[in-house]
Length: 337
Image (cartoon, rainbow, N blue to C red; front, side, top):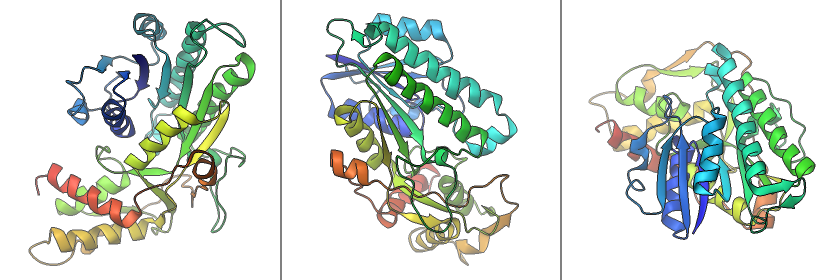
């Protein structure tokens, strides 16, 4: 049985990935390393916690001694690296932790993998030739788009927030270990995810929660900022595919081809709540409230997923309208509706 390290597996995307891999890959043993910061929650992993091919380790990727110990103790043969600080607002108010975790933590992991798997540059230890390191990143490393155009894997990096700058740095670190040392690395850059287990601070859970609790629904600026929305399980299947069949040294953009602006997001959620979880009187839309725009708020992100679709055969199964209804039902249950 091959042992795979998944970092950040108690968070939003990580927990969905862990649950998917544990269930679909019975010949893989998943070691989940998570520091259980505010964004990590073990309740996200109920369906995996008692499985024989799953082990949870509480720890921080910034702890190099622990990282080295895990590689040695479990003989890690593959990494899916998702652990990261990811909330843009938090990166504006406290950027240092984003550098420590996203940059230094990523270095610890990829360097530990290199030392565990390889004798020297471009020479693997016998039996370790197929070990690989997949790094999960974001489309925010590319900066912002105008009203037209798409991010491709060839788009120059132009990060505009401390968060996206730290992720861009981590991408470059992983890339360098392929080109300098010959490590088997793959990088994925995804668009905005949504779905079960997402932390309450993010846009879609915030809209649902605020609506159901009768509070104002805050929307930045005039609500015209556009994102490409990707249902989290579709993303996890893309990660698994890129890990299993992606070409070493390559990057793959994973996007849902579901561009929607924040006004559309808020109004669609409110309309669906009106239909499925109606208020005693009035519409949830009445709670929408515009607030001062975020500092350095990128106008539009949109991913061209042609490469992963054409090379690896991946395709998103959910469009926004089907995925958001599943998401609303999950959060309504969470919030006791």
